[in-house]
Length: 508
Image (cartoon, rainbow, N blue to C red):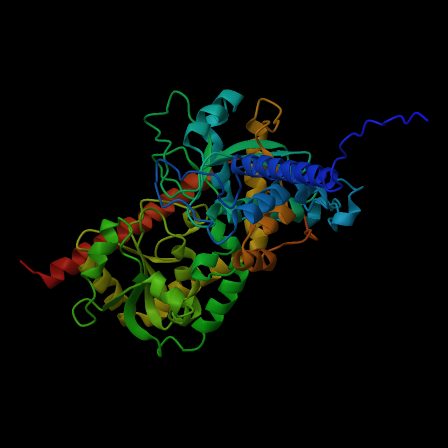
């Protein structure tokens, strides 16, 4: 009997195939995580991820070390690319009813209110482009000085990021645009605009006279083309615990009534940060003498205030003085609106910069102008005048407070709408978001916000307005020219009064 031998083949161990599969899975997972991380590190966000500070105003780069690298990567991708895909809070399409945003319904012409006179500054701000109009070349040249670009098309908001902004300015400024779209759904025109969120105007008229560049920011001067826009703090400033404008004004006005005018301390009061490269504020420190100058000047340490829970810096507790001083910092300061809101007579020290609303303030009607020449003496003179004429000083303080009360968030959105509307009329091209721009909505902003920022954003979220935005007066720049003349006459009158007072103090 022949026995055939069978050739035996070695058998693979039973665990090899699962190992290969597991190894492949982990390799693909690692590759996927690497690609996600690489993509996230190249994605710029409104929170400041992967953005360098503005080179024209350096500040420390933002630190996101509280997040793990992986969680940060997934957050960036989710918030930047997915949040607006599900329930876009800026949508103006009637089919997007799930977003909860309703289209504004036209009202009769009689229902449209007239805007305040100072809104006519909008046309003065845009006058440099009235004849030439605004081309894509104008906008792209302005990009050299911008931190980000805003494009609105069909009611959708797109943002192209270039540089980070200090603290949460960028986030809250762009949040304002998102809320404007919610406020007036279906009404905001298509626009393409460059925005810088640092303090000082940069488009000098003498340097850019041949080609004025349209750049939006928080303040301007008569020597600059920069277009003033409502600042971020109207929606809140989490870093120093300042809430939305309507909330803060309500509490400040309430605090101002805790004492009558005669009960208020008959001194001039200032509390702020002098360490902001401000020679004016450093000079103001020398006036801290209640006996000699009638002024109490306090240094504000925000780091210490944060540790104490901001108990000593509540704006509503700083209205116990008859006179409140406003001094510009590195440039313009957001503190102006809170100082005037107190109902004390505001002493405004010769400002160089103007924000959008301060141009409607009239000296001796809404505030008292103080000179930088012989600063302490000028403050003392204002205090003595007010204490000798308490009814008139009280009336000035009340007029200033009334002015700020008229500047509710409804009016802020009205100003934004009218400015954007007039700007859009000057564009000679159809706005199109660049490929590098990201769509932004309320949801994506809250997604990127930290818990404190998110609370402030939620508190400042608006809803569709029951009324249309106010209507600008007919295009008459004479209205603004008359206002400018009135303000200059009032300043000249105070200068004459101070000259006479000095002569009486130092006869011969």
